[in-house]
Amino acid sequence: MTDVAHKVTKNGKPFGILTVEGYDDSHTFYLFSDDYLRFKEFMVNGWFLYIKGVVVMKQWGDQRPEFKINSIQLLSEIREKLSKSVHINIRPAAVNEEIIGKIEDILIQHPGKCALKVNLIEDSENISVDLLSRKFMVNPGNELLSLLDDLPEVQYKVTS
Image 1 (spheres, one colour):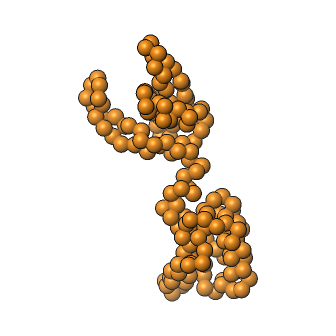
Image 2 (cartoon, one colour):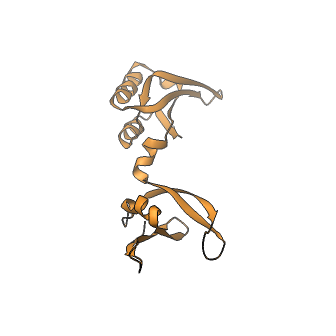
Image 3 (cartoon, rainbow, N blue to C red):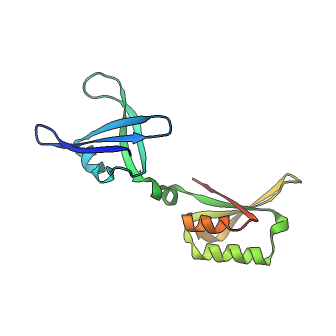
């Protein structure tokens, strides 16, 4: 969010103006009534937000489409909320007791609600075997991903 203003109409009703900026463009939203009351806590300059909404026809003024915000969440919390699984990719030749122990220690430290899938990938033969862990469910937070980054034998992907 690049700009925020909390204001009051001449009738004494509060409203807010927020400007969000993406890579290519920016857009200013005007929030009135219930929308303002629901989302004003997120209207802080400099916060990174995840905004969902729909395109509807304007209810007043010129009858053109507008984007109506349905929900706002902090971007930093989205990965944990929307992720469904963590895929660990490893070559079969790299699998040994030591790497299994390291991966297991990391997974034990980060329990959560995301499924864990282990993919054994042999590029030279173009073969892969997908395995679903029934023992581990993980939290795909920054700490888990950082620890997986430290294992050169492992690549991972978080999916939603």
